[in-house]
Length: 77
Image (cartoon, rainbow, N blue to C red):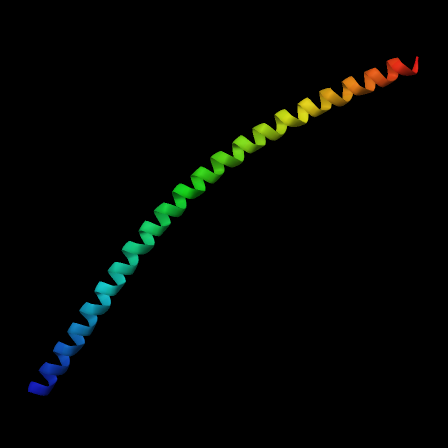
């Protein structure tokens, strides 16, 4: 019976170590997930800002091209 008790103790110790490792890994992955979530939020904000800037630049370029076309058309007359 002593051998069975020792084997059971070793199995329980191994399971405890495994559970501890899993808990540590879970904690690390949650922290990583939180960090990735924060980074994603920041990137989404930057993306929206870049879209706004691109739309503004597009409008300015279109106005500039219209102005140049008007000047060229006036020069043709």
